[in-house]
Image 1: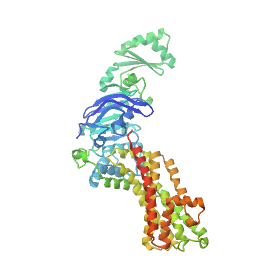
Image 2: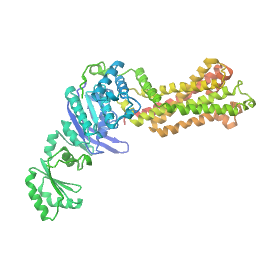
Image 3: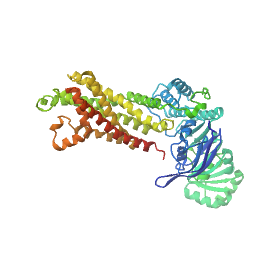
Image 4: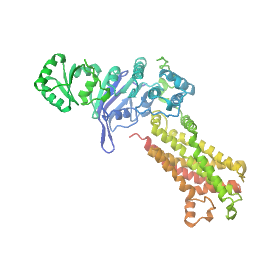
Length: 322
Length: 278
């Protein structure tokens, strides 16, 4: 039985040819936690998850999954870890019940046990009605649900979900969330999750870590991270990036942190509402005319932007106007 | 969502998890079964090698059958029995691509990686598609032989000889599958795998394809003597036309084994590279 923890110390990965995918990553996921692992494309997210799931070797550092070393005890790691990778590797010619049974039997289940388990999981991910159909005829959402079921076949104690809801419609996404929470709550499964949707991390994760440039940039509970970027921000949009840069220069002394994101200037501060008149006055004096001005409560998206200097995904970024 | 009992204890859950994996024979059976299922779900893929073989058989027999009277040293008296082995050999060489096609499909779909996340052994990953391919090779050879029987083939060694021809064909095709599978593992691309299987072309024609070995021109005779296919053809021809000849049969089997050994050395190496964690 594993200790259901993930411990990563100074993990590094350099590919042949000198490309550094992961520079120096350390973090710990405690037993029964849901851990949200975020980062822009190319930051080292996928490589880290590949190392943790035994598909790739680190070139530096140590990683233990459930107490087992990912390098020297890969087989043990595979037995206690369930993995749903971003690229859904399922054979389109097979039927879902067949894939689930076969996977179960690989893990040593008898024919009967494997068949029962397949039924159970198909019910869980609501694919019972489609179990006789070839996987090739499934929709994207159905394939993802099957992939989740495949990751659960051997009753893992630690579950790795690489972007489990990407490409799903909002209703299916909520279903997956509910399922993840239930697996975590009822079975005490430790869950390591990457996502493109910060809302998802906020919703699910106990702890969030943001990886940037191959190293962990910030780590903590969503509430703590949101509080750390200031309680609020004032966002002023202009007609061009140049005007925004100009405005940023004018407003630089008015906020704790100030950033431009394309044509929008963001001022992070406490009690932002009270500062709005001063901001407006300053812009008028400088003869800069904003197109819009909004007040934003901080979200994980803001944390991400502040830490990495970019949005996680353009269409996922929907700051809530206050 | 419903609430099935996920926490239920089971032989392969929790407690004895460290031992939780299928035995190697079971793993091999599972992967073989899985490959056969997908092969039979795309039966169209089986048609071309079969049609080509039967087509060749009919064309060669009709074109050269009458001329055969003028070919000296033709063992036995039936050109059909002489040319059938060529048709069977080409069907087993081109049919050997099925194992590789299956493997490359799994690599491309990512299912191969998915299997690597289970405690599956590498041997099972390699042998599964190959054994499934062997089943198909047997079926193909049988179909071609049945067709030849309909054309009037008379086996000098009876039913047992025909079964031996099928056996040789499986042995040869399975050995050659080591090569196509290596290409699949090495390239991970369907197109490259397809390309590699064209090696069957020189193998089937740089040999005593249409006339006995002694009648070949100097350079071609040299090439044919090196080509292991020559000995497989000789063995099959002996069985069909002249009778049991243990020397020819041994040479045929040895040729298959040598070819197979070389190809599987390559395949094991390619598998290592493919499944190496880097």
